Image 1 (tube, rainbow, N blue to C red):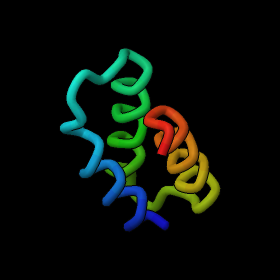
Image 2 (cartoon, rainbow, N blue to C red; image 1 turned 60 degrees about the vertical axis):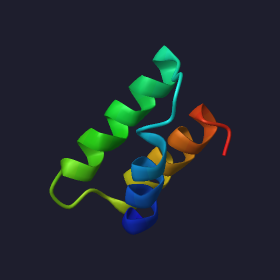
Image 3 (cartoon, helix red, strand yellow; image 1 turned 120 degrees about the horizontal axis):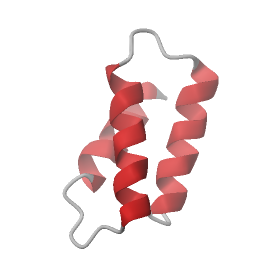
Length: 56
């Protein structure tokens, strides 16, 4: 799941015309991706949060 989150993050970070809430979602995910040993629950929530922010 962490790999999927990383791929989604990479895909969306250069998305043109991002809203403030989308930038916030990307920042939250970047922080989580840089964290040592994030829990599976947090990764799942971050994936859902980022997907919802970009309606993917």
